[in-house]
View 1 (cartoon, rainbow, N blue to C red):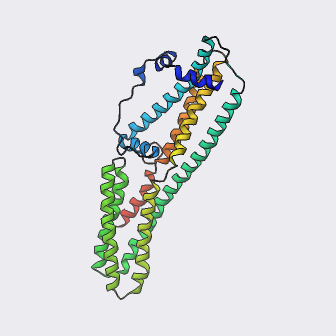
View 2: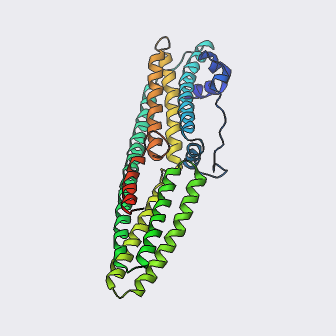
View 3: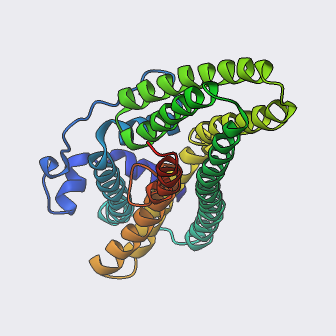
Length: 312
């Protein structure tokens, strides 16, 4: 039976699918987008990020529409396979279909649960790192008071510029060029801040400056690096691939099973497709919390408050 299901799905042309859905091919047309960084050899999650980065909110909309449409097509494809078997004079086999479909959906549910849990955990970690960076920067800035003038004033000014560059990088998303430029500027200021702080600590007679200031600066820089690395931490490529593949396979079997239970019920079909689409979108949105509806931008206010406390 499963061979018939796959062969039937292969034989059905796109025009037949669209005819069954009572829509034309051009209703599926979505203007092409230029995916920045989506070059050959990139992992699927990197391509997905490139789509969202390169197109902003439009990328998320294209993702939702494309996912919804593809799952709906897979659902309808399963129904058309059933109808094709009936039209060819063959009795559609139902033995074992329910068991296989249940196993597929159980596996899909397990994968969604683990992926969603991981995405939520990484989302919380990114919010925690924002607060941690604000605390570390605030501590390091206050410990500049251990240095005498004029070194203290010069380093405070560099520190303010460094934090401004960090804030600019966060606000520039999804413009990758502006993000990269702001991060490059912050790297230069970080090196200058560290070098000048070491030299100023060596010139002062107070050991407290060396013992307290330099470790605080190091902690602030380490947190910034950890936070940057966390933005690139996502599930392996195979997880995304399995997640989408199981959705389509599950929809195919669901459509096949629903075909043997009477006329098409669009309400049930749309609820099924919408549920899967929303779940997968939320997972992706949690993975890229500066590009969609779920965001961490509000936590940047903590850094902004630290900047305000620096007095210019």
